[in-house]
Length: 151
Image (cartoon, rainbow, N blue to C red; front, side):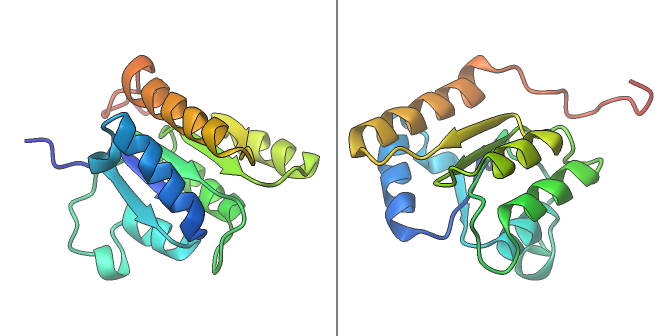
């Protein structure tokens, strides 16, 4: 039985959430998504803490992560994901409005898998979201769930 969340979407902007969900519905991916509205909620969900303490631990197929988040910013969420052996190999895609070169460099230093700047155009935004979902859920081969610590 596959009850797992395939996409953890970490975003605080309600308009971006709606646009993303609309694009994912078009590609029939919306039922596999969990939305976290800030960095604390994202980490609580991933690591089964706080309101998610009763959740069985499993990792999503990929994390779609904004950088500009309340409570804990996206860079800190990425750092926490990469520092925990249970989540270190989960693909993380930054999707942000940030045009700062420093954000891009810092993200890649923390081993982000992809960095996407949010387009302003509605149609292009939806196309990018659909392409990201299809790539990370269909095309990409994820790391095996059980990996050797010596690999």
